[in-house]
Length: 190
Image 1: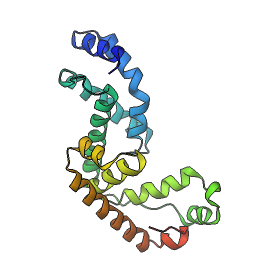
Image 2: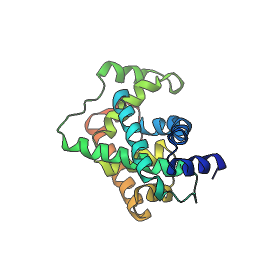
Image 3: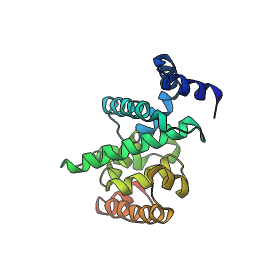
Image 4: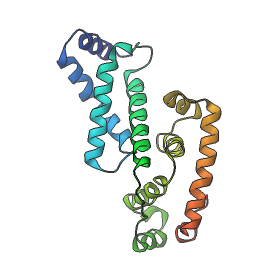
């Protein structure tokens, strides 16, 4: 752990609001990047980031300093995003895939010409159709590059659950893509 982080944590616990502000400024960008995986709405993402830092502030006394502060914040952010997804699944909303023009443009483009924003929109729409646990496993493994052990630690799951969840999630996303005829349109092999 960096001395500056630990110094700011101790100062924050002793009532120094400026010290906590320094921690927020230091880690706001990576936490925002992580939470962008949970919502593509800038306003909602900003609210989630704020929630992470509020939760972290009130939990700061539980931080032991045996791992980098960013790891601890990522764990809080992951759970915040997970709870956001769980709440959203309670609200009935049909996620629509991008229109066929976008899909045709992606299909016609070579791999190096595909607009990342358009491909991300298709992938986000597919992921939004998965239950929160499935979506979490795939997001952490493939977008965040977490190992099954890291996913288990962030989520408080066993490694066996992570592996099973990821397997089921890949099957479900393949079924959705087949049902929407995306495999043929995009030349995907899942």
